[in-house]
Amino acid sequence: MNMAYGSPRPTGDIDFMSVTPRSLSNQLLLLAGVGSILSRKHRLYLHSVFTNLPDDYETRISPLFPGQLEYIRLFSLEAHDLALAKLERNDARDRQDVSYLAHARLIDPETLQQRYRQEMRPYLG
Image (cartoon, rainbow, N blue to C red; front, side, top):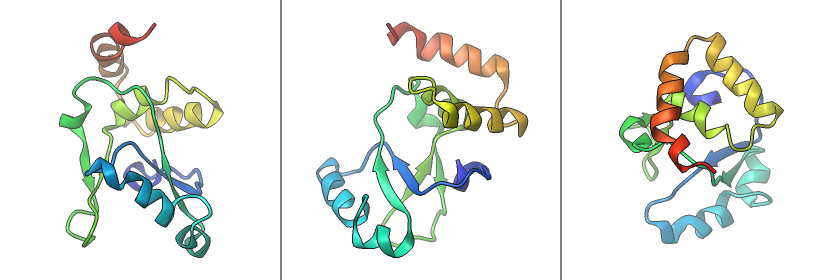
């Protein structure tokens, strides 16, 4: 939210959903997860997130800081996909984030509803 969309809400973590190759996920958390030397130094840690995402979200991701990082490539969810990813947990912070995206006119209600109906609802209980 902060890096991709300019949300003013402070955060102490960087959420990630996947690492390629997958075998490096645990190593990444050891290096930069909660309580790591890097997290204590920079007061920011990496956090692995598991959530339902819309179908085809991978076709809509955007690179963050392209060409600026030597050993890592970061991508952000498209705003509608990010809003839909926050449905499952639906806590106060998630609602605040979706509200920010809406007020910043980064999500369109019709697109959000259409993507929910077509790409998420069939898989939710």
